[in-house]
Length: 147
Image (cartoon, one colour):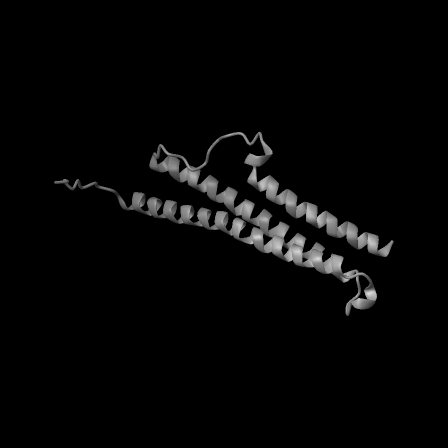
């Protein structure tokens, strides 16, 4: 039979534990949001790219041809901005969790202090790079349309 041990925890510690739970849930949310938005972005880019490449002449379009690259540029900028904001929130949450772990005296740490010495280990950079590459591609396509 398992005995129940009563642990006397003061109100401040209970509040800190609840903050830790909420911060952890928020961190998971933003991590999941990053990977949920990624396939949406790739699908939208694929659709725009297919539409752009499938039109052989502007006479087939109901809209001017330069609008498509501009839309691609705007969408890329919006998703890059969202990714940067998620990174900012994530970094703030990691810092807060690090402080709460210190206050609670937890031995298991969420924030790993490991070097990101390989591109495949650096999610923030690799996802931002892809958004930036699409952004540059659509900017170049917009500029080439006017040359």
